Image (tube, rainbow, N blue to C red; front, side, top):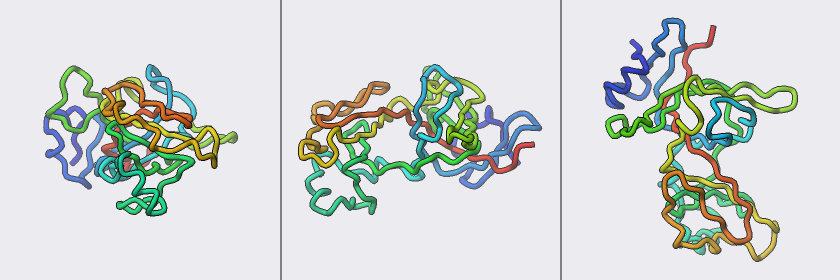
Length: 223
C-alpha cells in the first residue's frame, strides 16, 4: 500500500520502486504514482506558493543534461544541421543552456494540468540544511484567456527549486542575424554557482527558469 510523504524521508528512494503508489498522510488525500524523475522548467516569484503563468512552464521527461551538447561542440552541432547525438534538434531562435555549459533540448510546452509530487532533492539520504521539501504542485487548466494557475500545498517556489540545476532560455535579439551564436558564450562563466543567474550571451535575450524535480503524478482523481 501507499506510504506517507513523511515516510519517504525515512525510507529513501529505495523504499519505493518506480510504478509503486504512495499517498499523502490524509486518508482523504490523493494517491500518487512514483515515476522516474522528471524536470519542470518554472517561472514565478521565488517567494510565492501560487501564481499565474503556468502555461509558460515546460517539462523535460528525460534528464536533458546527459543528452546535451557542450558549448565547445557547437560547431559540430551546427555542421550536423542542428541534430544532436541524442536525436533532438537545436533551434537557433530558441535554445536552452544549463549550468555546466551544455546546450539542452527544449522542454515540452505547456506543462499539462494536473497534480505533481515535487521534491527539492530526490537523493533523500544526501539532503542537509533543512531544504528537503516535498509538496504537491497543482497546475490548473487554462482559463478563457489561456492563463493557467499553479499552487503548492506547502512551501514556496524557492523551497522546491533545485538550486544546483540552473537553466535559461535564449532567443536572438535580431532573429536571422549573423551576430548571434551560442559560440558567443564565455566559457569562463561556467560552471554556474547554485542559485545564481545563468550568464548572458551576446546577441540574445535570456530568461532564467527554476528547475523542479517531479517524483510522482496523481493516480486517483480528486473528490
